[in-house]
Image (cartoon, rainbow, N blue to C red):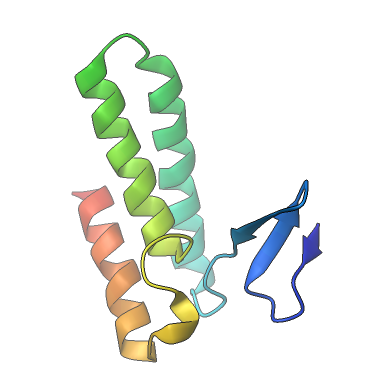
Length: 95
């Protein structure tokens, strides 16, 4: 997979996608990726149920935000803000 020189994006079929925050502790990354996989699966299985699809998509958004792939750019945040971002996402997803 091709990355930009600054390491902030991967390039897939000519399109840039933000990478996960490299400061994420391994355990946190694993938990967020698990939540992301479960949420994506829920989106697929909830087809036809608008409320369930919306809830599953909100979980995808929370996981991707926790990973740093959405929301404020992780490289523009200080360490405290980055930690707050992933801790908040995990509280939401674990709750």
